[in-house]
Image (tube, rainbow, N blue to C red):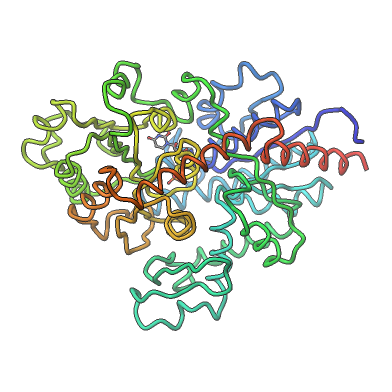
Length: 486
Ligand code: UDP
């Protein structure tokens, strides 16, 4: 048995909410298991994490000045949520890379027992080896998506030989028949570019790590955990410890999760209390997507004509008055749909987990970001899948082709997040997919609901004492203590 002395765990989250939220929740899992956790981040990002540190004495946040000026960014711009174009994102990445010197000197003066690093800090692999501590990597995705990423980067992947970007191909050798088109693959897979080289750096760093920590429960990643382990040489250990969103057991925690929400009072959520069971569709495209007005118009028209009650999260319009909606909603939309309380638009950050947990919410139009997917699964809410960028298309295939818990809206084209909405999804497709999911008549949809509720129950059990994720966390802690004490 290893000693009872707590581990000193340093965590380095990527500067985006979709990585900071789950990684800090993983931090809380460790601290609840009596380990000492320090999150190393920048002042602006720390402020959104600090709210939750007060009741956990062994959870700390250590800040490092963000070198914004050195790369020509305004003070306070420290999070990718604020990067709406490639030049800004590139400067942010450059500034994040410049943090390395300060982070290293802090860790040399105050050595940890383990570094839990986001994949976007590949230098932590060699640094961890230098100071003789294990590195655990966090990628923010599931092992199914990692497997698909691994398969399509091979030189003989079938997407190289299809005749058009829209011809379906089957990803070979997988336990399930997974089909997709070349147009759904990231640009850096289709044609190597600077990002392809970065991907290789992150991959090399992953292979030097002790293990991967995953915000998922092992049951949902089924055979793909072993598949990925074998495909990458069999050495890396994989620890599923999620879904981390289930940590937020009370509604205050759910309300405060991540960014400060624009839904500041419960009155607005009382709107949901007045709705019938499973009658509301929640529409949200993650933390970064800002659609052009043309795409917003199509969504508004699709939601209006489907006749269902909805909550729609819209970014990039927070400054607008209701009258300005006229630019991106059809005539009469405000009067007929919003004022009559059939639909609600949240302009800015919504309390997503609180909403998904509400009994009135019966469906989720999702961009298939991994956090959104795992949160929906945990709440037993089936999805209309509308993938946009990153690994979203792989996640869509998990939902529709492996588990059958999503209805595809018919998105055809992978784009960078800054180009979301370049290929418009038309109102008819949106209406059709939402109706199919929400009408409740379709036998396949009834089966979907049954399946996702069952998976939601498995997820809840996984994080309880004795559940798979809880056990994985305990095994990981025990292994890390042994490594430290050797
Ligand atoms: N989120 C939220 N409110 C919003 C938008 C996003 O709480 O209005 C949260 C959501 O619950 C999830 C994260 O932000 O935890 C988004 O992560 P995801 O991986 O789904 O998408 P990404 O932001 O990476 O595109």
